Every structure is written in structure tokens, then in C-alpha cells.
Length: 131
Image (cartoon, rainbow, N blue to C red; front, side, top):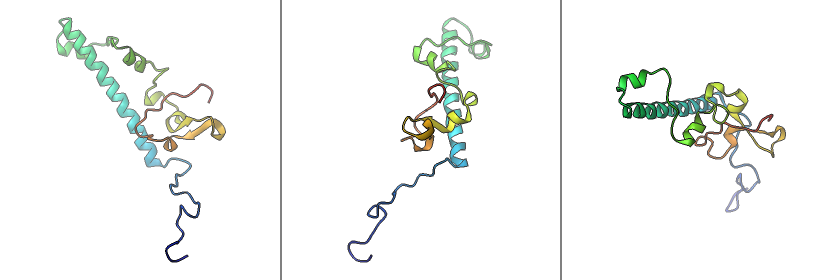
């Protein structure tokens, strides 16, 4: 159709944003790197809190960093993030949990992570058991 009322994707009723049903290999790689970056931030945060508490006790920085056992963080939220059952690391997550998330409306109760709004900003690591 020509003229002022020409057809477009939205007028024809087609999808404007076409999202593929599965993630591409580069998307999966970037997702793994995002998960690993979050894990490294948590590790460095725990190490920093450990060294400050040890240095407050009078231990030198080198000895605090090289100590075999880290002190538990005093902040409750950080302690919860260290629990593998609540916030598993990237290596401990299954393939299914890395790239899909639970959705009760989807058939099979799973949906690709890339279909979640703002999926690059959210750390979606925990899903209900047996799904």
C-alpha cells in the first residue's frame, strides 16, 4: 500500500520486537561472564571485610590476606549471599539455571533468561525446587 496510510509491522499486527526462542552462544558467554563478575565482586568484598577486621585485631595486612580461613562477615545480607543454597556461584549452577528462569505461565514452567525484562541487570540465580 502506498500513500499516507502505508502498512507497517505494527499496523499489520506483527511483532515489532522479535526475540529468538533461545539464547545465542555469545549471549550465553556474556551471561556466564556477568555471573563470574558478580562472584568476583562478592569474593573481593568478603576479603576486604576480613582484612579490615583482622587489622583491627592487630594483624598485619599480609598475614590477614594470606590467612587460610576467612572470618564470617558481620553483615547479615552478605552472609546470606555467601550461602550456596541461596546464592550459588556460577560454577555451582546448572546449565538450566544459568540460561532459564521459572515462569508459571510458560509451558514447562521455564523461560529463557533473555526474555526477562532487564535480564542483564538482574542476578537471577535461584529457582523453585523441582522446576
